[in-house]
Image (cartoon, rainbow, N blue to C red):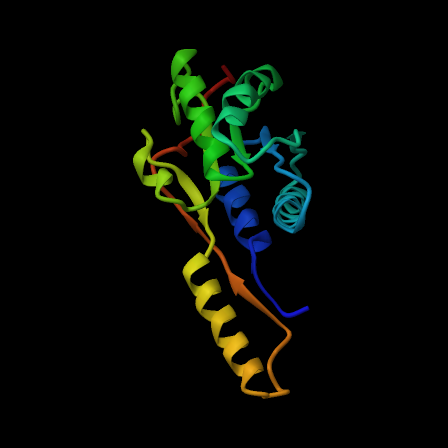
Length: 180
């Protein structure tokens, strides 16, 4: 089946490296629904953690919704981590909301990274560090593949993978001296 995929594994690894460079050694991943995206994000996280000698705490799976982040926030705090990588920006925004309700300051107490770089990432406070998924480019690439296929070009690639990238904003900072 022809497919256009945004492989976020490498950029998720960059998120872990970014957190590690800030001094974070206790990192949680909030897993999303089973599927390609979660599998690739988790693989990137685990690969980077293995390289850096870290043992991530994996929580979930969670539905890819704001309410899941609200629910997951208390689990993150109970795990004693100083940083969390969320499956998507909606879950990360729910975390930020619940952390604010609990008096947990981001990024002073806990750093948060999302995925997808949705408009929500720019609307929350602090602005969300996130892995940018090239959704527009994926749409253009898929349309071009379809047009080429309809025209009868048998040389149409069956699969195209687009790169993702880490966008650093205000929700990540140096690790606290001790977890919240």
